[in-house]
Amino acid sequence: MSPSDLPWPLLRSVAALADAPLSQIAERLREATLPSVGSSALVIFTEDCTGRPQKKAGSEDIISKVSIAELDTLRAALPDEGPWFGEAELAGKPRQAMALKHAASNALLVITDPLPADPGTGGLDLVAFLWDITARRIQEKVADAPPSYLLESRAASAERIRVTAELTDLHSTTLETLLAALRSSSMDHATARTTVTDLAARALVGLRTHSDRTTDLVKEPVAKAFERLREDLRPLTSFSGIEVQFIEPPLNGRALPGEVAHAARAIVRGLVLVMMEQPDVTRIRTHWDCDGENLLINVRDDGGGALTTEDPSISRLDRRVQALTGQLRMDVMSGWGADVFVSLPLDLPARPAGDVAGWNLAARELEVLQHLASGHRNRTIASSMGISENTVKFHVRNLFKKLDVGSRTEAIALAHSHGLRQS
Image 1 (tube, rainbow, N blue to C red):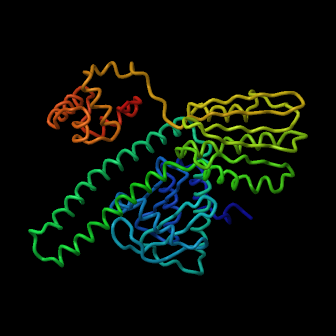
Image 2 (cartoon, rainbow, N blue to C red; image 1 turned 90 degrees about the horizontal axis):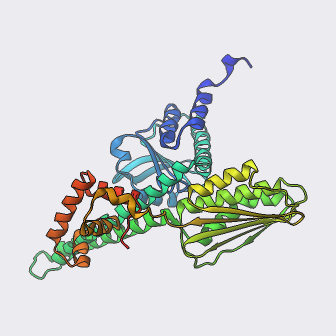
């Protein structure tokens, strides 16, 4: 085959997807699929990236409004195989869409307003092929993410929980007030009141559900995370001839932040692969536990004890552990194998108080900032500190000036970056 006969557009698309950073992968996939199906927008929903589970490209009116709850509902209704076409609630209204799930990661691809594809051109098969490459590439990039990405992702996860909590508080108060007004005996039009009351009640339930779902995305029960590890390793352990033992963690262990769960699975997979490459290894045991503050991982083999911390693969895994402010220790005994212990903190480390000394905050201002960083509203802060809401507002204005920020969100983000929380 001469170079002119090669499918260069497809090869260029594959190369672009392979090289794309996570922030641009949706745009690259949309560019690659446009000739086949067309679209107004393309959205990827993946729980591998807990800090930013949506990756989007296309119409701003769609990508700025589409919600995790909408995508989660659509994914739950899809068959496991093949593309789905139909009408779905996206960005707040019904839209024509094409959707595919990725079996290995449960990631979702949604293409809005797709153009009909000519069955004879293989356009749908091409889209499915490119989507499979993209989903696998996302998994690989998250598994091998640099320290900067892991720290940024954890911060984004924490910030999304805070924003969701604040929105829930705000809209819950609004809806509860609406319900009280509509139930008032001084109002007429009983039928209208009953109807609107029912709608408001359902909206309140939906809002709470959305808040719970968002929290679930950034936290994973330790038992579920361990079961996913077992599934990840099942193909490897089925054909290696090496027995891999799994010691289950406690069912009631603390839920893991998403980045910790993903990193833990990648670390164990890496350790198992390194140990399997040694001669004379017949058994590997992996054990997880949780002490409430750390995920504790132990992986042990029965080899000759030839592994060292200087091994390039072990060094790479140790860097990943350090990116999450964890620790990796290896005990090796000649003729008895290697025993690796990993500890991963479940919470972001708090920065020393000296980090905020340059802000010159008064004691009351610092206390208000800690409340803000914990997602508390002015009324809650006032009640907790025994001051009026106007006084809280006064302190907040002073905080804005001293921190050189223009909004509550900026102040909270700055506080989070310095490890501030209410004590």
